[in-house]
Picture 1 (cartoon, rainbow, N blue to C red):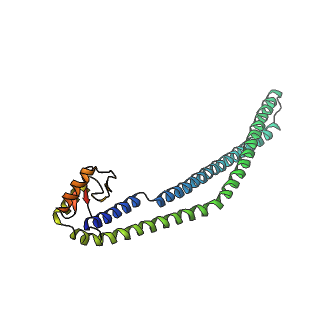
Picture 2: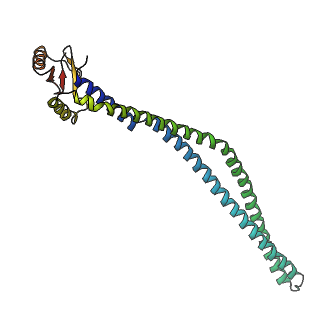
Amino acid sequence: MTHPLIDLQAADTLADQLRHRRDHLPERDVVAAARGALTDWERRRDALRLRLAELDAAIERAEADAHQIDVHKARLEKQMKTVIAPREAEALQHEMATLDERRGALDDAELEALEEQSEVDDQIQAMTVEEQPLRDALDAAEVAAVAAEHQIADELTGIASRLDGLRAAVDASLLDRYDRIRKQQMVAAAELQGHRCSGCHLDLAPGETDEVKASAAADGGVADCPQCNRLLVVR
């Protein structure tokens, strides 16, 4: 049969371990990784969509500018039919040649934009197959994290329901000393195992062991560890 103080310490230690696990859940790391993967996918998809929109706008501008050039050139060609003076005809021909160069450059730019538009659209389509697995992975990770949190919460609730009884079983003055030590170090009560304190894991000298045993015999089986000042249960 264990000492009530050791039973209380065991419950407090388990609660400490559960709270530490709750605060450092590996399942949360999985959630963060899954969310990061999905966020990265969305960032890449959004960048491609933005580029697609830019290309659409560039193609529309090129078509509009080409139309204006065609209208302008048609007007010049009509004017050319009424020109008699060679110098004026030469000027019109030069202007039409310039328009042809601009029109050719616009056609080349539009063709490049159309080709890139097709490539970007293919990339977006290829990415769509990645989306659902990423979302499924995130959903599964979140479910696992919530389940782990609930399990820990249930275990902590179970420990809390026993704490009043465990604390009531410890002598009031001893409980006060236990609480004071717990504020400084999580393990406040340990057992003497041979010549070793199970709290600090240090061996006591033979004389220290004798003093601890004598003190414990006079104080309900509990003494102070001369190494770490924890409450030391001697059985």
